[in-house]
Image: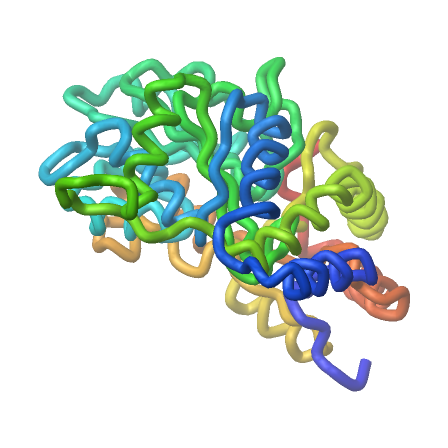
Length: 346
């Protein structure tokens, strides 16, 4: 290959372009005729009664924690192995992050370990890399269910997002659905919905109080809504591609996984990433730096997260991969099959 195959690339088509152009022509580009339907449609995908489109997944987590009362000094359990979005949300609120190691089978927060924690205001539980996790087993505190990488996948007999007291999704450019930036906050309780709108809207009150100015604009929402209509076809394309890459390693895909990332296990992730890149494939760590390790938590305190940081590699996998790119990646995987294993295993 003459050029580096990028790790991520959004998949846009004429319908996406038309949706954005229609919003421009309508002349209303703030939170309106695209953002509100996106909230409702996204909530339905997650099995929730209501949804509100916001500027980012991080904003959605921060708002969810705020609605659950996680203010200054509140203890919020976070997975030791995830990106730092939830950590940023805690910092915005002044909440205290409590890192809990992840389960080896899912790389999601370990229910047994988090349930042993006391005095928690909330738990952020993320499904990682398209693998549904047993978030329904968490009862230590109200759960904010993060579906940024597992939207549209069943989890524990419900859609991913259907177990949390509040649930969030992301439409960042590298996620299953891409709108540049964007996120979704969803829930069931009418009281939470009312409180959320009160938190976001600032022009309908007589006495000032702090607000979150983070509602999604219609330009981004129109794109996200168009992308959402293609979710099932995107998931099917990802699974088909994951099956091809898994076959190159002599393995099978895991049923029920969305494959928002194609992750492999290597003895030395950094060395394997260098090999991929030497052959024109932009592989990366699935999580740039595990949140607990970035925060300064010792590796031996979160051994599963530390293992994942050392051994996991994310390989380009997305519907916009050209056939030549797919073939090149499959050939690399076949060549190095002796040194790689699929995660999650079938």
